Image (cartoon, rainbow, N blue to C red):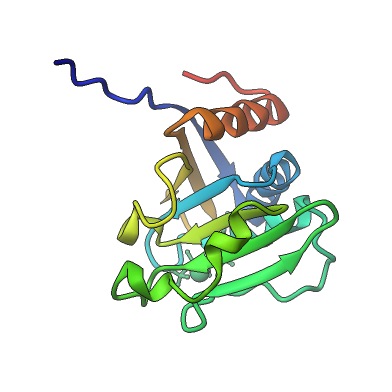
Length: 170
Ligand SMILES: Nc1ncnc2c1ncn2[C@@H]1O[C@H](COP(=O)(O)OP(=O)(O)OP(=O)(O)O)[C@@H](O)[C@H]1O
Ligand SMILES: [Mg+2]
């Protein structure tokens, strides 16, 4: 018997200031396709929601649409041009069963992409094929985004993002 480890591929992007995060997020938002799942990992105040706001802009969610951590409601939906965004937050979730009843399965086959704050708390609740982004707080307004794909679908998104940012996948 073989134990085959999934190929995990990725790259890191360092940004300065919220403008840097916005540029990165917009590139990611414009690369998103239906069914994509982004898992955001980072401490309180790392910038998960700030990044999500920029991803929404990149997916053409109208500017001014409130994008906040759905800490208590668990899920927010935003309508973009070709895509709906489902913004989830696992921070206060106590079990994956609490996700039942949100209708996530019904959203899976539609024109919806998913962004999950505190994804690592229930890392197998949605899928094992996700684009994982760890946000490292490298300074007051500087951040490092460590982007990794964990499957075929998310590798496609990772490649799109790399092309948009003109970086090499290591
Ligand atoms: N380059 C940057 N990228 C993102 N946020 C930044 C940056 N520089 C400063 N910030 C500030 O860091 C804070 C990030 O807060 P945000 O709510 O996005 O974090 P979060 O990871 O979603 O936290 P929580 O776990 O509480 O939901 C904001 O106050 C934002 O203005
Ligand atoms: Mg947040």
